[in-house]
Every structure is written in C-alpha cells, then in structure tokens.
Length: 134
Image 1 (cartoon, rainbow, N blue to C red):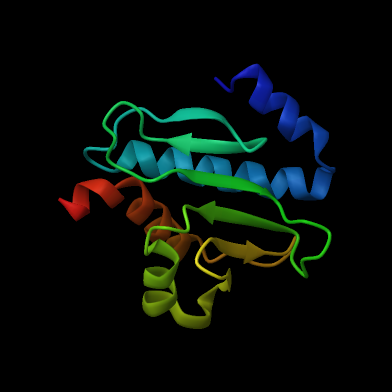
Image 2: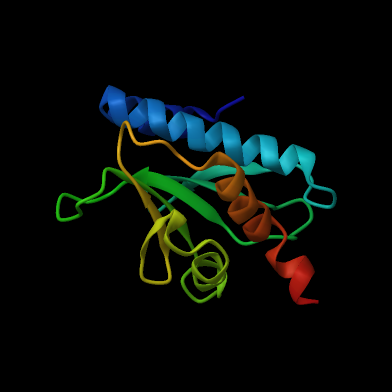
C-alpha cells in the first residue's frame, strides 16, 4: 500500500510522467520481492520525491524516482546516491543503453522504450549495494 504522502506526490505530476513513474515504481518493488536478502521495501519521500529503501535489511542504497527539472532535456529519472559507484557501474556495464546524469541518475523520456531487463539489473544492484560491499 502506497503511503498517503507518496500518493499525493504522484498525483501532483502530469499524467504522462506519472504513468511512466508508476512503471518504475512497480519495477523497483517487483525486483525487490524477487531478490534474496533485500526484504521489505520502505516507500517514503526524500527531497520531496518517492524513495525506496531497504530499511528492514539495510542491504541496499536508496533509489528515488521523479520528473527531471525544467532545465533537463529528459522527462523523468531514477536517482541513486551519487557517493556510490552505482551509476558508473551501470555506465560500464550497459554503455549507451541508458542516458545518464553524472553519477546520480538514469534518464528517460515519456514514450521512449525503457530497457526493462537492464534497468531491473540496475535496481537489483542498488538494492543489494551494501550486501555486495561487505
């Protein structure tokens, strides 16, 4: 069940972007449920954006999803903590499969085809980040 404050944030976004972000949300939650050792995901707001945390097991790094700002050429993004090496790892592994913003985000445009299998691997890497660093 989506917390009310998260639902309100989704409802504030325009329909085309909201629909795409719901797809990312579903992908995060499904990947978490399919990945051993991740446990239950906490869905909350961080910096006013939906964030997904592995609070139960502390196995992973926070993932956020949101529309990009007006200065971006992209419509929405999946954000990762920039002090991790996650986005650099994605870039090394998947190259130009995605567009990236520095060390913090994978970028998307409404209507573009999202490479689901590759994005699922990015999400899995984030959700198990601390477990792999041990």
